[in-house]
Length: 511
Image (cartoon, rainbow, N blue to C red):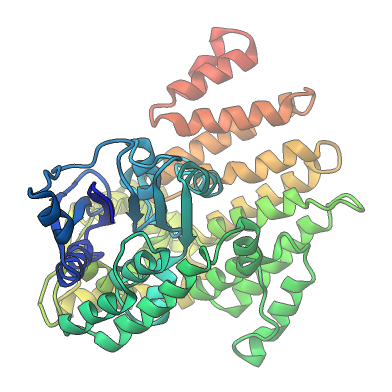
């Protein structure tokens, strides 16, 4: 028995059941003869909003012995929290940043999965926080850390993550309540009792074991496993070709093949591997890293699945997208909602969807371009209506004719030119070739976003001949990439180009 309150903080995202978890803990505490106070502060700055729930517990018998009730705080104080529970890895990091996790006192219970924040998703370049570094920070800052993928555990049992969090709290032993009181709280709740109890028990055992992911190498090994058998016999040759690539490249190549199958067809996936094998043949004999092939595997998969109007229509009519929208707006089962797509196709995108010969004639004819310009105004298409959905569904289904479109011919030619440059660079300057492979990340999206990225990419390619003769050519190209991603106006890129040229006259290249 202690003469101070036990203090627990929960950091949960919107829709993850942080309120349900708090209600369970309150019921458990009261059933065990404890006084409990809870407060919550909703957040709206990240994703769907992260909410901080704060609970304090004090034994009623101890309060009666002392002859007075405890004074409980409304919010957690840095360095004065016994347990922090985070439903996602970045939320655990934010709790550390707030000072709520102390090495002398705090048990940190956190899920290792990620939901990306708005800033991470909207960054021009790679804006995602380094998960390995974040995991190491979370693992080392508290008195004790219990970490495992709670989202995966919840999905495994078709349960909600709040039940997994409750099991982890019970298994960690941070509260003086018997396990039975936890399971009884779930049973009394009456909602999805069987699945929630199964998820609770799984999390309880993982927490007692100290967390299933005590070593990041274990998680990496699991992520890199390649299946022995493909889903169908027709895909088995593709899988065998993947397994013939350097081991480090195989997981990325597997995802690339899956993306090509989803984007187009088996023949397109075969072309992806053929191109990748061309680059793999350039790897130095005895080299263990295969950095060039690895960078090309990711970049090639992205470039070959470029976002044309057919791809956009395909993605917007998927059942998974509607389910995701419903989850984001927290629609209840059976609740009706509408989705309106805002589309503004330009003449270039319309012409790009046409057969290559017709598309070129259209772009070369001022009259035809003026005619198509009538259809470039903003369009509102409701994909939750039969007509709106059918329009985009049929457009997405036209991907079988994509190879004949103007946009496909243009992108296919650009990809081949990029691969040829890699083949020319790699024997003489391997590091520079790796950076050129990575530079594909500048090309993304569609419309004006794609045009800006392509312009920046071409600007960097123009510097290759100059960079090939410099000892720091690869580092310079990497800096140019970061500058190109720093702002949409090209100011940072112009500054780097001027420095590379040794004078301000180069500043106008990227303007």
